[in-house]
Length: 316
Ligand SMILES: [Zn+2]
Image (cartoon, rainbow, N blue to C red; front, side, top):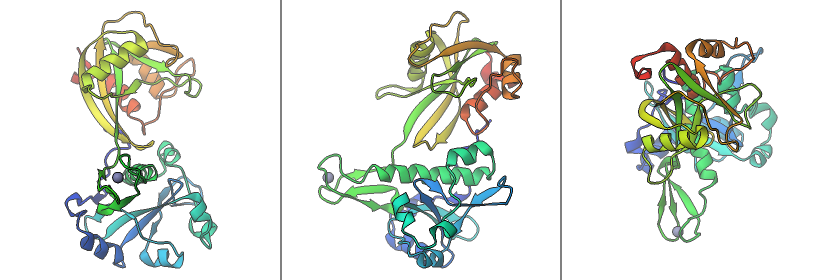
């Protein structure tokens, strides 16, 4: 049931130790420290010749020195649960990386996380770890100045906080909550094709939660706005961090009466009711009209699969 890009269990985050700069410095300076390098938010990886298996390319402190890469402002990801070794992310712009001597040899291959997750070529725990690093790094890229006074903010707590140098205001990593819902009458569900989707792809509908809303309200509002349906009961199914750039997907089933759909053409190109047999063929990539649904890296896939499975949460 849990989608691929869930919370990584690979490292212990040690969140209660992030505010101890001496502790972080000792981890960072140790020979066993490891660094994942992101360039333009894409991770440096290692892959086999066939390019169907990949893993994070972990850099040692000696590697960083050899490449003349500063380990200032690295992001603390956590410690290895067995060895206790500190693991960090180092985020570089493409321009900075291009100035590294031997970049093409040492800082390649670079593969976008969405591609890695879609292709299923890396372990789920490493994919999730890159997602965490990427989300955090993406926030830093847009949080360099204080929204109150315009002063420069500096990195604190191993990258889990920024503080304004001038007024002292503190800023924390951004997470955007999104409701993603399988609208169902108990026997069928609604899947939609949005104008920007690839041809033939249908998925569950989704939308950002607005200030002042709870999850149920956001689900009902989105279902009405996008599909024109009145939702009754809302049940929570699962969540997924979605690092594009820093969303949290909250997966729900939204029960409604069967009936015609009144879609919002700005958001939805086409929406249809699908029964469980239809959904089985969609998941198997065998739909007679060539329609398909997102792969198992997406929470939509988990929601559709749960609907096909017909568990208690999916029944009225
Ligand atoms: Zn300020």
